[in-house]
Image 1: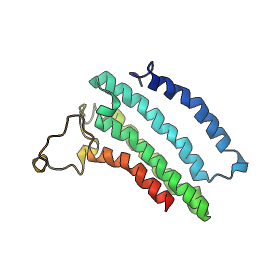
Image 2: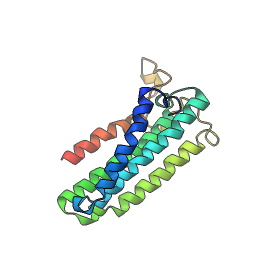
Image 3: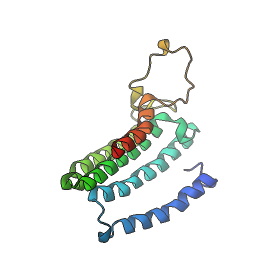
Image 4: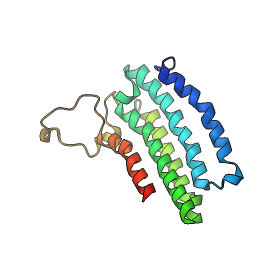
Length: 179
């Protein structure tokens, strides 16, 4: 965000917040009959938005790189979007099926809050505790292919497997929601 505050991306990002807050206000109108887990999820999306700001600042100030090029920060912040999507899918699914326990979503809400704490801890402790570098892979690159098996070297800023999974999970969650 620090590197995008004055360009079109930053301006649109800032301009999108007031309409989203109005959306949240009207989403909570009792007549909408929106499942509680869905209301929680749309509000929880703001944690993803907020997490990208310090992540972008850390990435730019520490490494001189944009957030998308700093895999461990990118993956940690982006994972909050995955938590949001899971809560949305479960909330809508529970509401459509008449499953009050799922639509209320006590456990998914607790899990999302734990997820938030872990993401915040990763973002805050990545440099001082884990000595994460600009291209340190998210979750230590779990699931990465052995470089000896790949004939072409990946670029230094390539996304790790866990960060790709976080991005791809949005597609998977949509498929689950549509089933």
